[in-house]
Each structure stands twice: as C-alpha cells, then as structure tokens.
Image 1 (cartoon, rainbow, N blue to C red):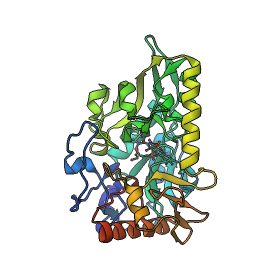
Image 2 (cartoon, protein in one colour; image 1 turned 90 degrees about the horizontal axis):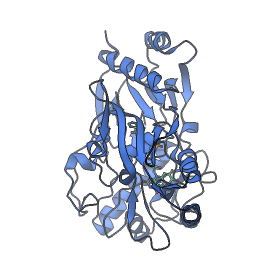
Image 3 (tube, rainbow, N blue to C red; image 1 turned 135 degrees about the horizontal axis):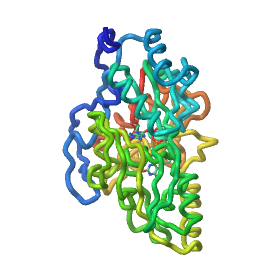
Image 4 (spheres, rainbow, N blue to C red; image 1 turned 120 degrees about the horizontal axis):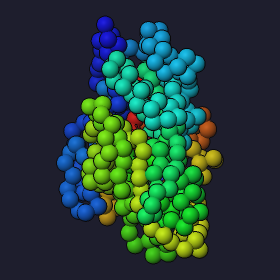
Amino acid sequence: MSFCKLLSYHYLPFATCVHRGFKFHASGLPSKQAVQDKTGTRLAPAQRSHLTLISRPVVTTKTEDRIGRLLSEALGSGRVREDVELAPFTTFRIGGSADYFFEPHSEEELVRALRLVREEEIPHFLLGVGANILIGDGGFRGLVIRNRVGGIEFLEGGRVRAGAGVSVYHDLIQATAARGLGGLHHYVGIPSTVGGAIWQNLHFLSPPPERERTVFVEEVVDSAEILTAEGEVRTVDCDYFRFGYDYSILHDRPDVVLNVTFRLEPEPTESLRTTIRENLEWRDDRHPDLWLYPSAGSIFQKIEGVGAGRLVDQCGLKGHIHGNAQIFHKHANIIVNLGGATALDVRALISLAQQTVRRELGYELRPEIGFVGEF
Ligand SMILES: Cc1cc2nc3c(=O)[nH]c(=O)nc-3n(C[C@H](O)[C@H](O)[C@H](O)COP(=O)(O)OP(=O)(O)OC[C@H]3O[C@@H](n4cnc5c(N)ncnc54)[C@H](O)[C@@H]3O)c2cc1C
C-alpha cells in the first residue's frame, strides 16, 4: 500500500498547506484590496495564493520505518536523518521536527530525491533557507529536503549560472559584485536561496537614494533549469515563470528549480558598493535584526496604496505580544520571535491582526508566508 493511502485528510481553518510539494489554497475571501501584479493586471484567485484553508494528515505518529529504509537505500545510508528539529533551519527559529531530513548537494541528488518521493507518494517539502515560511510546532510528517545545491559559474556576456541552493545573500551577491556585475546587489540583506528567490520573485525598493520603484529578481533572470511537475529536466526562459508581485508559476505547479542563469550588467564597483551600503542601512533602520529578533520578513501581502503594516499599526497593534511572539514595535507587518515563540503564538497574532483590521478598517489581510507541516 502506498504511503499516501495510509493517510486520511481533514480540513481545518487557516494554515498547514504542503503535501507532496503541492500547496492547498482557499478561494478568495471578500476583500477591498486590489490584487494586481506589478504591471497592474488583476490576478486570478489562484495567483493570489493566500493560504487560509489547509489540508493535513490526521496521522500524527511517526511515518513508517519502510519509508526510512526506502529513502536510505535510494539516497545513501547515513544521508537521511530522522527526527530532525526544523527550527534552526528557518529564519523564524520556529518549527517541530521532520520525520526525515535530507540535504542534496548536487542537482543529481536533488532530482533523485524528488523523483523518489513523487514515485512513492511520500509527503515532502523543499526547503531553502526557510525565510518565507512558518513551520508548525508538530513538525512535518514525511521528508524535508533542504536544498544545498551549490555552484556559481560565470559565463560570457555578463551571465552567471547559480545552483538553486546557493544563497543570494551573501554568496551570490558577493561573487557577482566582486566581478563588477550589478543586478542582484539590490537584494542585499534579504535571506534567500536562488530557488526561493524565483518562487517569490524576490523584490526590493531600490536603487537608493530615490527608491522610486520596486526592483524584481525576474528583471535579471535569463533562463533556468527545472525538474517539471511531470518529472522531466527542462530549460525554461524567464517568461515560463509568469512572475508577478510575490508570485511565480511555482506557486501553482510543483516544478522545482535546479539552477538559474542570471543576465547581469557591468557596473562600477563604487556604485555597487554605495547601493549595497545604503540598502543595508535602510533595512537596519526599519527591519528587525535577525540575530536578535528572528522573523520571516513581511507577514501579510502588500495592499496597494495602503500598506498592510500601516493598517495593523492604525489598529494599535504595533508591539502587541502573544506568548513569546510580538508584532514588531518598529514595523507592524513583521512578527518576531522574542525567544521560544511557538508557531501557535505567531498564528494567534496573525489572526488577531486579520480580525482587528477586518472589523475596524474593512480590509482583508492575506498571509504572504507559507505554512508548512502540522500546527
Ligand atoms: C528578515 C527578512 C527580510 C525579508 N525581506 C524581503 C524583501 O525585502 N523582499 C522579498 O521579496 N522578500 C523578503 N523576505 C522573504 C524571503 O527572504 C524571500 O521570500 C526568499 O526568497 C525566501 O527564500 P528561501 O530560500 O528562504 O525559501 P523558503 O522560505 O525556504 O521557501 C519558500 C518557498 O519556496 C519554495 N522553494 C524553495 N526553493 C525552491 C526551488 N528550488 N524550486 C521550487 N520551489 C522552491 C519552497 O518549497 C517554499 O514553498 C524577507 C525575509 C526575511 C526573514
């Protein structure tokens, strides 16, 4: 009997959302917010991808030994760890344990792992640096694949190919800026793997000092190699990803990015250094220091012309504490872990903000982060 057949599912309001790499989305709630991509095109409900209803396994006991044996045989004995605490692998420093945990260091290993879990229908989640997710206190029943696929290769014409597990900040930005190549340096200070950056179309208000527009990582994506939902390794161009604000096609198709080729522009080192320094200073003034205040960046999606954080602030919730989590005192769209916060603490603050803003101001706040595992 396949692993999935051993599981039954139920729905519960608001949050766990990943099974076999698929995310489950609820239909759109009534909202005043105009959900648009950056070209102004209204997004279809599926593209909005907020996560308010979830599907999760009822089974909470450890997955069968058979799964462990299967994974070890295919991925190498000693390479698959069991009962691994996930909190240290997220920027929130929150989350229970994964039944199984594997770190692929090459594309071949990543593809092998993905093909196996798909074939055997083993629930799995692909983790970057965990900067845009909240993992439940109950952990994850199945395999967490923490992407460590590295490699930075400089090609002709200002192009650079990077493995999907390479960290954009520091490694890729450092390597490209050192060669006088600009385009990725805007994203300094933002924790992300290359794969995570494509998933969410990494963005930031840059360049300084004007900060007149949001720059998006899609602007420097030339092409990428992916493992498609159908199991085929394919090279695709930038258009394939249908990038939008906080959106790529990866939200709706379980394709996995293996590597990305960026097309960068030569830029004087001094100008790159200035942008890097000023962007880091700008962030330092407004954002919590991750070492002191672990977080997942912005919690709610942007509301055009209004600002999700401003709405939460208007309701007097800045600085509000639940358990060991707090709506950050300097930035109301960020929730921080004050030390020992649980996923339920964070969830309570998210609900409080949503309910208060809905009641007092009539706006619907939609989480930007993904909810993973059992809550
Ligand atoms: C302090 C802080 C500040 C932030 N500031 C910004 C900001 O200014 N701008 C911004 O855009 N974001 C910001 N973020 C959010 C976050 O940095 C980005 O969303 C980042 O791209 C997440 O990358 P990750 O590797 O951590 O992905 P994860 O959080 O590990 O995963 C996120 C999703 O991507 C999927 N994924 C990861 N790798 C792949 C792959 N190879 N193929 C397919 N799917 C994949 C995962 O399965 C998951 O569904 C901030 C976060 C923090 C903590």
